[in-house]
Image (cartoon, rainbow, N blue to C red; front, top):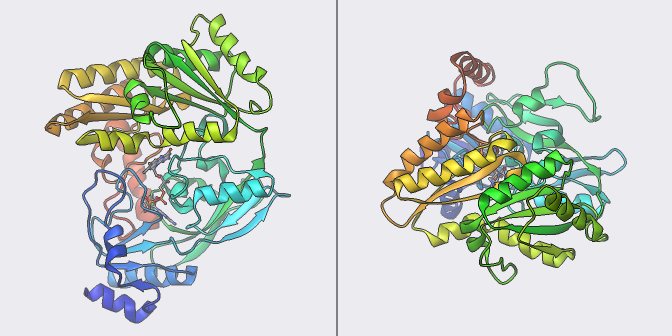
Length: 452
Ligand SMILES: Cc1cc2nc3c(=O)[nH]c(=O)nc-3n(C[C@H](O)[C@H](O)[C@H](O)COP(=O)(O)OP(=O)(O)OC[C@H]3O[C@@H](n4cnc5c(N)ncnc54)[C@H](O)[C@@H]3O)c2cc1C
């Protein structure tokens, strides 16, 4: 038992300070390539007062605290790389208010994204953000990473839905930021600053989300193309011609192969595919016809398509899409995954470069994801020595920035992309990042070693 564990047991009690080895091991890693780090203590509060106490003790005794939701992060954000305590918020999991009349929900941070979606739907309203990890990831983690997902194309990312939140700063001070009405411009927008702050500025103990009216029952149109470039070009065509599906997801050939299974059997000759989720398609087949006519008219018709208008059929295809990352991991001995984003119309350039980078280094690659947002999950894969990964990632980042893109569309910087941050941001911007961090956490005790 560490000294820190003993101190926290005395101050917070055995109900809150965990002595379970399995949970401690769980709290040593996330879903990224970041090496695990065992924390000195794990604290699992049920109440914001306990969060206050922990952060007061941390400032007094100078130990680091790493906030954690469900640990599905892909950039090392919840790994306690400097030791100290992990603050896991999974037990604070109550939906406190769901108000269809005012279109808002108030939740604790440990509620999963899927739970809020289901509760909202049962109340006749809609919470759009849908990271592929939605069944397990926490809303606290979603806000900390400003998570996206397929539906970000039409509805925007988590930030669009954060009206306000309750947060605790290092030192134990708890306060509210943001507002409950949809509009509010009083003071600096601290809710926006905290959204995407990766647990480095404050710990969220309550979240106020905007909801929207439920859209018409969607259906899924899967478009198959002979080559990846055809599929990518179709994205730009649809947007130029003012089609804004609920989601527009790309899968290249290796991703399609990984997705293949009982509920999803793409044609053998498909070189790329788009998952095009369309509002109202479940009840009106003509909506899908409009997309096909548009692509034919623009000279890039798909070589095949599937209409999945029933929730089960569409759900099976979406499950296959959400599993691509896991299945790629199972197929190759080594996998590294990035989530770069470029202006949408430059996607053809990006995917062409990914192919060249992989070929040049003798690696396999797979690209899939949120093509409608110009945000792709680029994977380099190999069964041999993965020493080419570093060069592959460096080249990928270089071309992404040359194309006017960003290193991370949704997974955050965490530990893994820290060293690349100066390639994207000017020294003056980096100095402002550091000044913000110092203003909120002068002792650098809250999630140290992340972003900066
Ligand atoms: C299979 C798979 C698919 C994924 N698909 C997507 C996707 O489509 N879109 C997407 O955006 N991401 C995706 N992700 C990444 C991940 O699920 C998201 O980043 C998610 O938001 C993390 O939530 P979490 O609860 O697991 O947070 P964690 O991994 O536990 O933590 C992530 C970060 O949030 C901070 N944090 C957590 N809770 C709080 C809190 N209450 N207060 C302050 N800081 C906090 C942590 O310190 C850490 O920095 C995927 C991951 C997997 C494994």
